[in-house]
Amino acid sequence: DTEVTQTPKHLVMGMTNKKSLKCEQHMGHRAMYWYKQKAKKPPELMFVYSYEKLSINESVPSRFSPECPNSSLLNLHLHALQPEDSALYLCASSQPPGLAHQETQYFGPGTRLLVL
Amino acid sequence: AQSVTQLDSQVPVFEEAPVELRCNYSSSVSVYLFWYVQYPNQGLQLLLKYLSGSTLVKGINGFEAEFNKSQTSFHLRKPSVHISDTAEYFCAVSNQAGTALIFGKGTTLSVSS
View 1 (cartoon, each protein chain N blue to C red):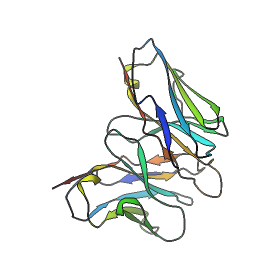
View 2 (tube, chains in turn orange, brown):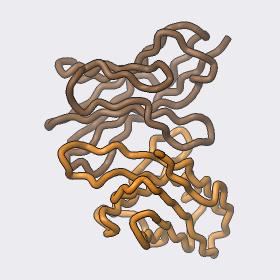
View 3 (cartoon, rainbow over the protein chains, first blue to last red):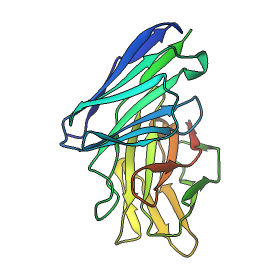
C-alpha cells in the first residue's frame, strides 16, 4: 500500500479563520513533507519532518504551523492567511533521507485551499 | 547545487504517436532522478525513478526513461500515447543531502485524437 491520504480535499477560509490540514500514511515511513503548489507551477517544499522532528523549514511564514503528532500523522495549522496563500497543498512521505540512497517520496492527492 | 531543466513547457501529440519529454539535470554529486505525473486536480504519482544500475528505467503506464550521464539527461519516452496520458509531467532530482526533491517546471502533455 503506497497511499497517503489528505483531508479535507477542498477548503475555503477567510483571512481571520484558523483551520488545519491533515495528512496520514500507514507505510511505516518516518519522513513526511508539506509542499505548496500554485497553478501551473511545480511543488515547492515547505517543511520536512524526520522521525517526528522538524528538520527543514524553507523560510515559511509563521501563519503556517506544522505539527507531527506521531509517525503516521502530519498536520498543517493555518492562521491569518492571505489570498496569495491559495494553492494546492501536498503532503508526501518517505523513508528518512540520508540513508544509502534517496528514498522515494509518495504524494497524497492534496488539499485545494482558497483564501478569501 | 542540483537543478533540473525541462526543455519543453508544452508537448501536443496525437493519440498512438510516440512522445519524448526532455529533462536535463545539473548535479555535482551522485544523482537520483524521478519522473512524476500529475493528472488534473490530483496529486503527484511516481512514474519511474533512477537510483543506480541500469540506465534504462521502466515505469508504470508504459513509460520508460534513459539516464545519460555524459549528456546529463533523463528523458521520458512512451512509444504510443493514449488520451488518458494527458497530464502534467515533472522531472525531479534529489538534493545533495537527500532531504528534498528539486522539481523542474513541468511539461504539459496534451494528447488529442
